[in-house]
Structure formats: structure tokens, C-alpha cells
Image 1 (cartoon, one colour):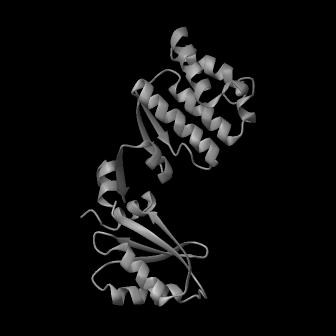
Image 2 (cartoon, rainbow, N blue to C red):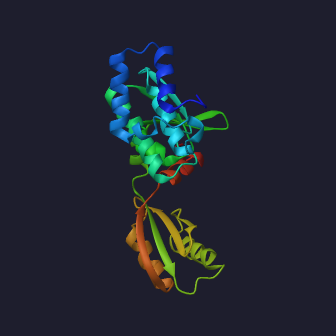
Image 3 (cartoon, rainbow, N blue to C red):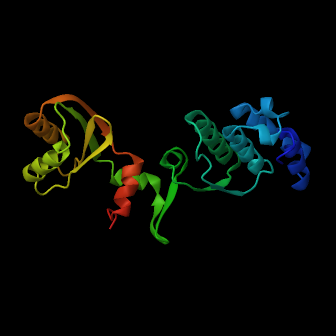
Length: 230
């Protein structure tokens, strides 16, 4: 309630949903234990920051202990600290009360942190519906080799891409730039050992630094959109 203090908004919702005193105190206590909402109780809702308001909105959504909750982009536009708190609340309430929670989100950090089952929709059509562990297992062999190349020029990635395509002609290798100063080379280790690719890159270019990372959920989803599941 925009003009009321947070605690008065909670009290109104308690009456609307006919929440017993016992359940109400239990839920409020849980929110305080997880994210310490109590300092916000006397603040008018309209004076809360975006992150504070989202935390209170999440608490309000779970106040009456519903069986199912739909959350649309619950962490959009929030900083890392608030995102972490919201994910903590969602995960704990799901675990404690066995609440079914459906997220619609473009934040793949939410997906990785919270979801066991994912449904991926492309142009209104479901292209994947299943366990997130299966997706991770299917793409678990992918690794990204991140390299810093001395004398990097505008055409360096094109040259690297061409050299890799010639050397490993039967293996799809993705070359892209996702962070300033680094060139990403993503390979499927079931098709070509990462060490072979690393040795080739270091032999073909003057390499300043190297990092190896697992494929991100964002890249996994992109591969699914590109038809990697079928």
C-alpha cells in the first residue's frame, strides 16, 4: 500500500487473506531471519528504494503461505546484493513450505540459482521443457578458453577463427569477444581436447594470459535456441 508503512501493509494483507496470528508471526519471523525486514517496518512504501520494495513485495506475496506463486522478473534492475537476498527468500520458502514457484525471467542467474525445471520458449513455441540438470549434463563438456593476445587488432578474431576452422575442420569452434581485452574460444571437449586448441592458439599467436571457464547458462540457452537439442 503506497502511502502506508510496510508493517501496516502486511497487517492489511493478514486480514484480507485471513492469516492466523500464528502463521503471520511465523512468516514475519522467517522474513526477518532471512533478510532483516524489521528496520523497514515504519517506512512508507513509496519511500523505499527499488530493492527494498521488491524485498517487501516478495514477502507480501508469501505472507499468506500460498501453494503457488508466479514471479515475473523478480530481480530485474536490482544490484547483486539485493538479488542474492531475494533468491535466498525464494529458495528458503520453497524448501520450508514446499511452495511451487514459477519464474518468468531473462536473468539466467535466477535460473541457475533457483530452478530445477526450465521451460524455454521461442516465438511462442516450447523448444525445451525438462530438468535443468539434464541441460547442464548435455553441455557439460563445453569449456571456454579465454586468451589475451599481444598486438590485438580489429581483424584478429577473424584471423583466429579462420585458422581454427582450417586446423580443426570437422569441429565447430565458437570465437567471440564477451569482455574487453579477452578473446573467447568455446569448444566441446568430447569432440576436441581443449589442450589441443590451447596449444594451437599459443603456437599461432603471442598470448599474454589464459583463463579456462565452464560454459555459462547464457551460452547453453543460446545453443538451445540455435537448435542444439535436436
